[in-house]
Length: 221
Image 1 (tube, one colour):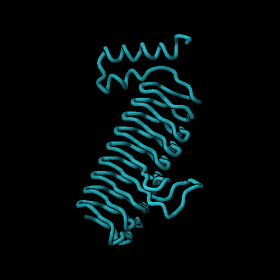
Image 2 (tube, rainbow, N blue to C red):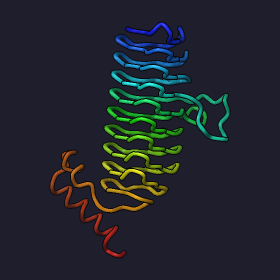
Image 3 (cartoon, rainbow, N blue to C red):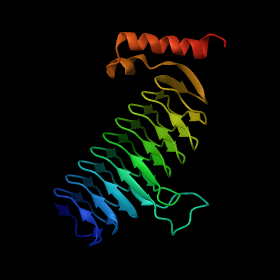
Image 4 (tube, rainbow, N blue to C red):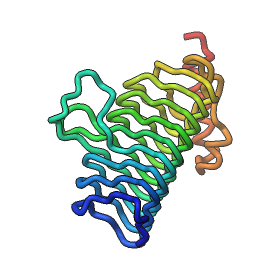
């Protein structure tokens, strides 16, 4: 374990084996971090936060601060749960839940690029890429394998389906069905065929998805 002399780690924090904590980082008393996680410099992790094994947290990331919700009361007990093998790059912000006993949840093997914001009560699945400066409002759900292009914004309570690919600098306030390519403002342009192949979907499954897409978007119903 390597903890820089300028880092502030509360004695009550639960820190795993093989961890590295960089200069001027602050780890609060209710934080649990698993083995072999790297926390770079100027990171703040506070509140009730559980982080799994093998994660990388970049310079200046802020995890566990109260939600940006005008109805939030400080006495509420809310938390963040983060799985294993995630990359959380510099200056990402992840806010804990807003309603009492609620959580913001991030799964495994996700890549949050620099400046991404994960609002309160978001539910992030596995193997997702959230590119630079994406903004997810409260209660956004992102299913496995999605790719959210840089600078995109997502309104609260949205659901982004499995293997969705979003073009950068887009904005959405409506749900995105699984497997689609989406861009601009609430527009769907086609299917993420390459993503489906890479994910191992069979030719028969891909054909059925294409038929469903054509029925919903191209049949004029």
